Image (cartoon, rainbow, N blue to C red):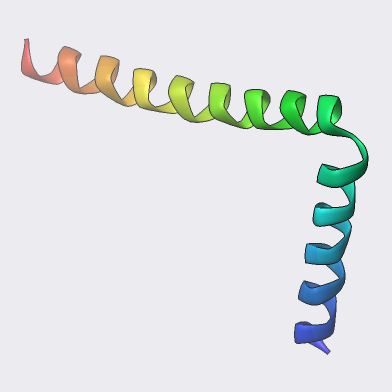
Length: 51
């Protein structure tokens, strides 16, 4: 059952990427922004600990 849900989600994501490239780019940009922000926050935290 779990494997079937994963397959359905993957198919949906691939369909979304192929049919809506602008929306896909927005999602990738959003996720990348979250990742960059997380690294910046960790760096700021470590900088306050060390200095």
